[in-house]
Image 1: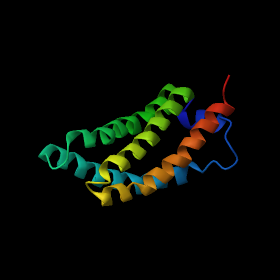
Image 2: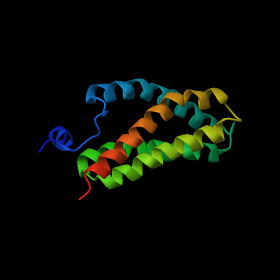
Image 3: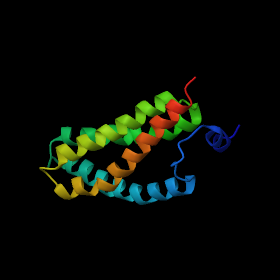
Length: 132
């Protein structure tokens, strides 16, 4: 079964966004991630900020990138739920640690935090609705 057929067959809340809308949101957010994360990693490499400040950005990047393979490759809803909560928590952590160094980077995470908040509730709902 193709991943799209599998996803379409899952029980989902009535407010679930269309896949095209979800894709559009990531098309908006990924450029923000590229610019802000790249900036933070560069500043950490230059020693302008402590390297530990980049840690939540690195964890977030890994967790974000492995979500799709977990969700649609492994089709593991509980593990995908854990992963999305890690993504959400690391965004909050990122904002907290970067705020005193580069507020613009923290503020730029607002759309990312807002979308992942919605995505987290959606993922947790789908996982709950499809529990065995």
